Image (cartoon, rainbow, N blue to C red; front, side, top):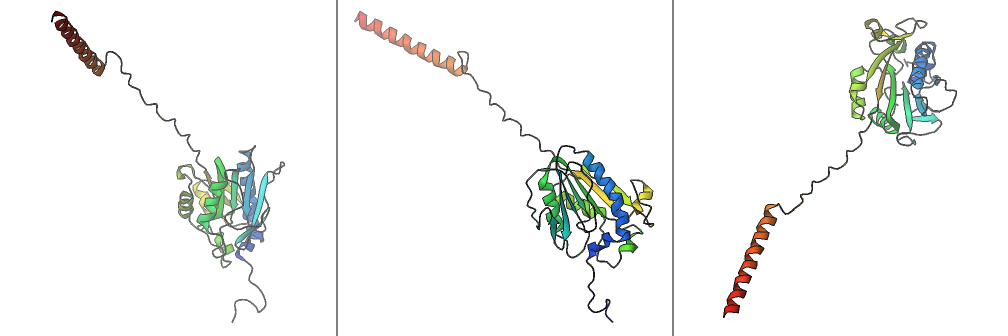
Length: 249
């Protein structure tokens, strides 16, 4: 017996975020993203998210908004990776569940590498993912979504070029009841539906100037100069003696 009636298509995994259960998580994340953007008041930002998600509010409209559409992105640009965005041009990249489906998502290492490329030095990547340890996972079971442990995300961030010593973890969303979402970092928060990893791009140190080569000045006091002067003096003395002998003769 087929799992679905004939003619009925299975919704894509990311469609879960448009359901009531998914919206309960996204609502909490929206406030968390707003706090990230408050720390970069002067720079543009890039938001990559899922269908059904709303971007954080920005009165100055500095955001480039992209949503997953199959293995590609739609919105400000219709594109796949590599992204058609300039190097080091964004103060923040908000990657909201864009890698949480198992089959169709872009290569995670490639997309995280692109996030590192487009971030300005000192810029922030905010990565939201599903928490595999949350009881809330029963609400996305059998949808095709995939939750990964934080250690896997940290390894991918390291391969993308981020420094792990700057990674901050935060658990957010409901534990079970959809109307009881919150944010925290305590022991009781580890069972929340989502986890957010925040990491800053390294600021490249300026190359130090080449050390000046110390020039050794060969003056009169240098041994080679002294020996050369003595040799010339001896030769001049011999010339004087030879001239005196010639005069006597």
